[in-house]
Amino acid sequence: MILKRLAILLILLLLTTGFSGNTQKNSITGKWLLICITDLKTAHNSFRPENYNDKHLLFDFKDDGKTGEIIGQTTSNDVGGEYELFENEKMSVSNFGGTKVGEHGWGYQFWDNIRNASSYGYSSDTLLIYFESDTKILKFSPIKK
Image (cartoon, rainbow, N blue to C red):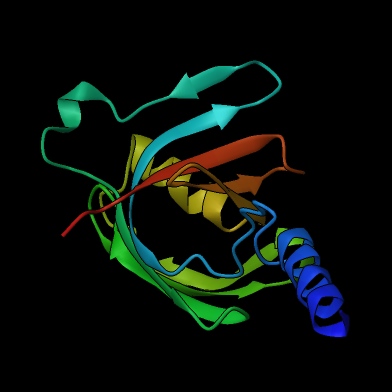
């Protein structure tokens, strides 16, 4: 009888914690392609301009759930930086840079926006990095190997 009650209690505990459908992740580690910049106030989406041909914004995020580094490519340059992850999916990007030679348009927007990152989240398999007081979003799609 006691074992049965303990088993039921354990099942209920598992259902309300680890298996509750919580999709919060404590890491943004992965290889990501910037697919869109969204302004939540205006509902405007900015996509990679068609005339960019093969110029994609590709990034490799690596972290331990607390601190990490970004290495990637914008439209014209190799870039890198560091970030921190905090409780409640908050984040901060520090020490982000690169050469910035010939950077324009969408790549230039990324430079300014990633430095102002304030939080992150996921929608399905899309990484969302919020900036400007969480009113705008950098949306990334995973790069499949």
